[in-house]
Image 1 (cartoon, rainbow, N blue to C red):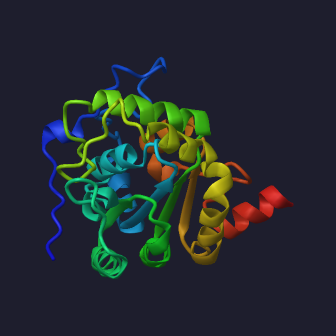
Image 2 (image 1 turned 60 degrees about the vertical axis):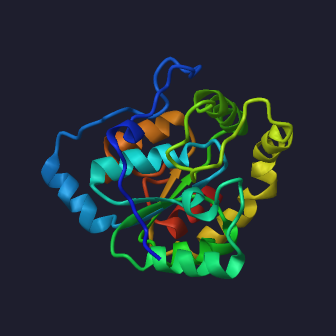
Length: 237
């Protein structure tokens, strides 16, 4: 199996014309002012996993971080789905994911909790987009309008999301239910595997933009630590 990572300039550009926020929810075409420090980031952040609810902005963050850090980006949705929304059988999918993480450098975005352990084990950095559910639901709806007539850069060809889709209410319900349905399991998996990894917990649009602006200086709130074990101990204690 051959995995291709190339993106055209058009795919790298994410429009925000329909956003309800006063500024784009992720900074566009951001360039860093400290190239020497960026080189250090690449040596420390070579294999990055990005997880979070649908609509949280995983793919957008992956593209922007990959562009800034010069790391190849893998959108799991683009590899799991086939035209007509036909999924990959579990055994084949697990083998694909193992091949994806065998590389020395990558950013992988997507949920797929059935293979999350494989990705967490291989990663040196874990980013959890833990944004409010209503923000994720709005962005998922906006995305359908934005890509109504054009293919999404993070999804397989032949997979469209019509605005007037009868499955949309169920999809939005799953997003709104994510904090109760999936979040506890995700946090448990992070706790199992991310103890010795760099852990980035982004809880708002402001967090995301600040992280993109200075990824090498980012610290989580509780006690200014990016270590999962220390972070949990401090917010619990």
